[in-house]
Image (tube, rainbow, N blue to C red; front, top):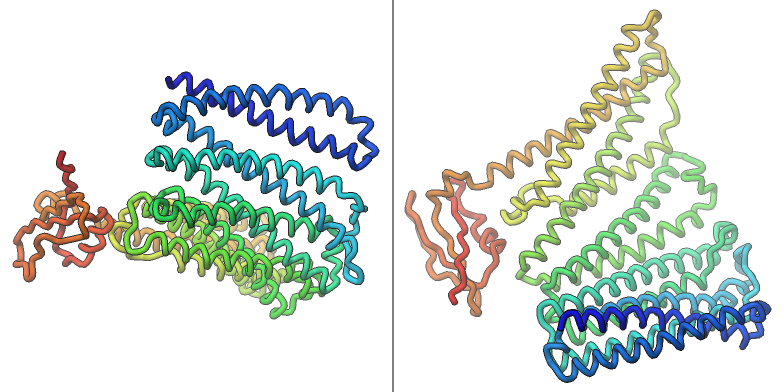
Length: 558
């Protein structure tokens, strides 16, 4: 039975991919003749190849999928099989993303002549070609039509299967493996296209040379944004109307949300950092920050568009994740959240430390140079860059890091990985900077003609700055490590700790017995139902420091 399913659906998948490629290429080649393209006369061999591909792949796919459909209609177990769902949702994923890319190219081919090549008196791209014919747009539209038709057919099959046999367990997981990657790809396409569209429109309106001397088109950006809207909007609407209640607590939905959130945060902060850098450099009197020249208004187009588009996405995704979590977060969702939070804290701590070391590096040079009688280098432009990193890194780190969170987060593996990684990096940085610092001193001590006014001695202040930052970071995380370890119940205390039992029930959360005024040294048995371990840890986080507890889940009764 399983081997038969594997055979039918593997052949169907291979024949479907071949048929989609053949039909797409065949239609694109036929359009060369329809538009009287000069290359049409040299495409007759290509026309024969794609015609043969289509005529062979079509009956192979149709026959095998007809047998698969016949078996599925006879046997509900066949219809609900994971192999059938895997084939159907694979087809939906591949066809939907391919159709979105083709829609992007089709719209770009239509809009380029309108938005880029006929935009007087605004600036035009220097490479603006003649797009008087719509061949490229027609070919992309044909491919989009073919792939969208295959997607619609397979999605209709999946919907009918769900209506007949339901969708639970692995089948629901396979649907999510299709929908949430497609949702993420469409979302990122939409954001990238929207930010590029805003940036290029800004440059064309101010008639900046930054919008002329580059091979970028408003039509392409608009096509990317609209293709992403089509892919993202279709799947977001399907999920909100049919699957939202089932998917709110799913791990894949949380993973997709946190990946989109991480990308939005990183790109928005890059834009904010660039704007901050331009502002600081201008405030310090730098005439050409970042080689932007005097056209700062045009230079702000890219970072401002990134900050606006991805900043709005940041806010909206945070709201969605908060609504999904609500007042109750399942274990796997909590694990994804902790991994994201601690990873963001680790990366932002690295940015913060690098920025702080860079600031101190140049300040130390400015202080040390007159003391030893050498000329210090320019500090305004580099200080602006390092201060930007310091501020951005500190803002993200403070937003994600909690020195003493509730026990479930405090004792998590991802937090321990963050603390140990930060401690390891700080120790290695201190080791390297200490060696370099001592090397500067010993080079002059062992020199035949030691000189205080040597420019090489400026490295003393440089490496001292790195050593200072590494020491502060290391000491702080060592204290966090000790604090987290002291908050963890000791083994000898766990042996005599009161017992908390958890019994899964279909009722609302309840506490069977709660002591009102416990006497010192007494032991209690607390029974909690319909709650996760993290919920129990959070409730018991306010116990006195001398108290301890041992969480022992009960096995469900058969």
